[in-house]
Length: 57
Image (cartoon, rainbow, N blue to C red; front, side, top):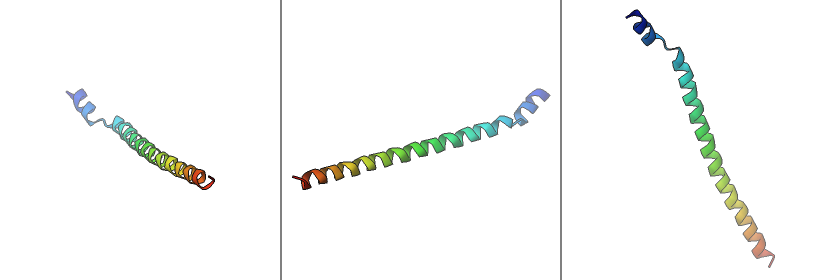
């Protein structure tokens, strides 16, 4: 019985799990931001290319 109560009170692994969840959340946010920025950047370069093509004709 004491073994079970010590096991329940032991929370040494909880910190590692919390850090893993925080790292996963941060990675997801970074990936989402980079994906959004990449799409905006591609649109901007496409617009620049289109403008240069139409202005030089």
